[in-house]
Image (tube, rainbow, N blue to C red):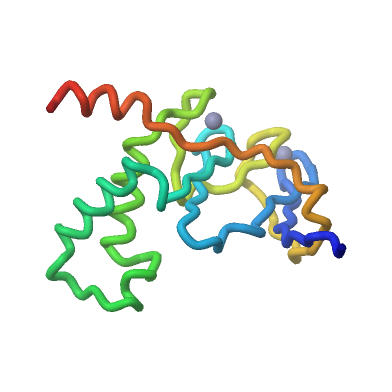
Length: 152
Ligand SMILES: [Zn+2]
Ligand SMILES: [Zn+2]
């Protein structure tokens, strides 16, 4: 069997000269959201079709924007106010990173060595999927669910 390939984005850190890559191979998988800690760069994933909190948040945001221009084109526009509000609202429900940072959809990648965001992007490359370390963690909502239970 042929080995599965993964596309990775390559970076060089302009602060410490460290070269590293960030895997992107399943970014586009339907329903998967990738977040990143805004302090340490730790990646986290959420499967929006299984995440119960995501369902609630997206319902609320969709209701609010029901009368808004809702064509498919706009729904997938990164800069559509609905998209931004959905991201922000969801981020508020996520447990913080173990470093104390917040998981954000649009947080910038960071150098794993010195945590700088001063990076230069190099051309992407394709490598064996096996050699991509799976260091992503799953988003949890323990804190949000506790507070939410109190209110109702
Ligand atoms: Zn660095
Ligand atoms: Zn962190």
